[in-house]
Length: 252
Image (cartoon, rainbow, N blue to C red; front, side, top):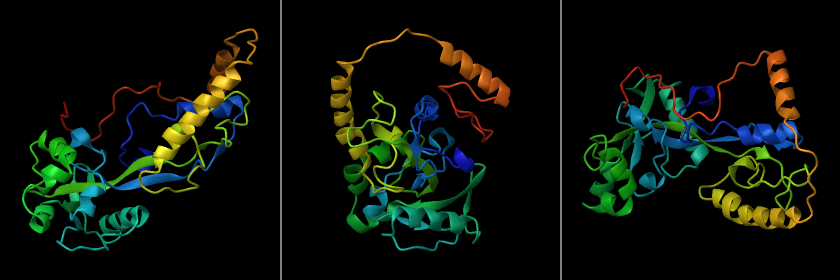
């Protein structure tokens, strides 16, 4: 919930991998490069921050402010869309109250007005089911959205073999930084997962054949605890299994 934004990530995603790698001596890159998905769920609270796929807009749903106005070109990039939504809700004061914050409407009924009855069930059945669980029918009523913290473009620095500066430490997936620079297009995360996942697995298997174990110790854990105490760090325990809801509502 960086800067108070909702997040589409699960509540156990607390960057432990990045912290452990950094403390072991592996450099990070672009740690500030965080991507916001423009349309995250702003209501209901049970799925707050979950992704509303951009496919919803691609098949006709339009973003609308509190005055019923379409305020941006529907084919703008993800970053521009997110920034436009935030500006509309804050600087222009044309947001809709949702839970403890503001949001905008995503006019999903427009899809079937444009393409005919049954389009939503056929093209975005997952979205239809997700909202139906909470008594909301995308085909008949618009939904409330707000940008949600979605993807970490920064992370642990690797080379072409998915190896870090720390010999023997291989990384793949969203823990990696720099594959897309400081931004990425939708779907490019498959490069992190599939391509570099395969490379990391292959290279790690090869490296494992020549590994010689030294004397095992938990000394690093003791040192970490001492450093944490000296720094006055009072963090939450990880992994975090359940979220702390701030909306003051029963979300069971």
